[in-house]
Length: 430
Ligand code: SDX
Image (cartoon, rainbow, N blue to C red; front, side, top):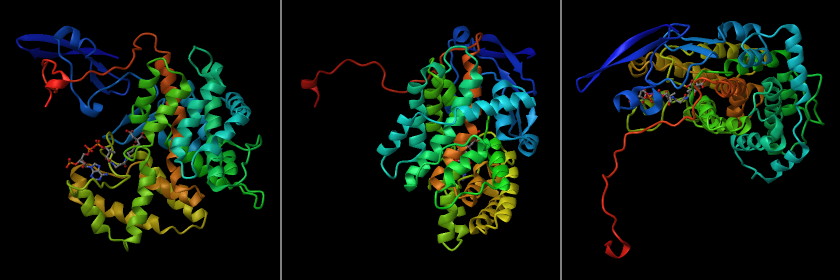
């Protein structure tokens, strides 16, 4: 990273702040000594202008719609890799050789089961429990069953990562089977990562599930497109929790909770609920566009807008194409796809959205594909979590292994409450 300086002048004093340029030309002002040198902190609600770390994992450019994992373009990875290959790339930093890929696959197969005692947990969630709540709970619980594999020491992280990547699939599928009262379907050694998940979800003793290559290919693509996205809300949560020295499972469990929010990963579920509402409202697009534009209405177009992308989210472009292909391959005619495309067309020609650079994001079309696969709407964000897991683990690992700049995350604030005042004893308070 090359260095020049910015000059800051405060109350007649000037300060030199180093400028940093990243490997893709991204720029920052290094303010790590600002408080010590000037007595000032910066204020940046939502961290819109603040970098929390340096990272070698993912680069995205919101103006150009670029997303690269470890230097590889998302378009190429989504088209030419399996999710397991991309998970390995994020974790290790290089695409695996054939032998490395086979060994990683072997680890994923070996760790696919969860402890039989954990299955009883599912009996004690209420029937309508949120799959994200179950997921966060079960992932956190893993640290009690596998304390030796919680990644706190600087052990070989690949088996630790493989254990969690494999078990999240089983936990998700088991929680679905429990929710519909069907017998659990255990992971099979002979199926791929995505094929196994689909089989655990949909195979039934009365009607064996046929794992279709098109569906497996689409699921691989979706998981790849969700695999990492630099310092988004949930990844920053994983890093912040982990920065206190918390084990991998509890840090990831916190990331699952952050992803749950409808402004973040929960948007893929909210998009379908919005499209279904429009459908029930006889496709009254005007009503929903008006609500979205009304500053006094909290309603927003779910799946639209992005903190970083001020052009098309490159993932949304790929998912939209995959959506049309998958529904055709599965011979599914979902009216919500037409509603989504119409809503996108209206919004993209409306000044309100154009002026604010609001485009479809990763969540806008993904739910329509999950529906076509038979995945229930309340599990869409679980699918997002499954995809994002290798990214979360990679960022936790990168932070834990940073021996030069690793600190517990502890932002400051500007206090706006009452100035210091004398105590009033109870008997004097009226
Ligand atoms: C993800 O960070 C990541 O990388 C996240 C993610 C990842 O891979 O990890 O990409 C995944 O979370 C995608 C985003 C999913 N969320 C949604 O689709 C929810 C709908 N979108 C918005 O709530 C919003 O766009 C956010 C939360 C995504 C971004 O919010 P920002 O950056 O804080 O932007 P903002 O709220 O300040 O909005 C700027 C303006 C405001 O209008 P004005 O006050 O200027 O008049 O745009 C408006 C907002 O009201 N606006 C919208 C809108 N999104 C922003 N108006 C209507 N509909 C929307 N969707």
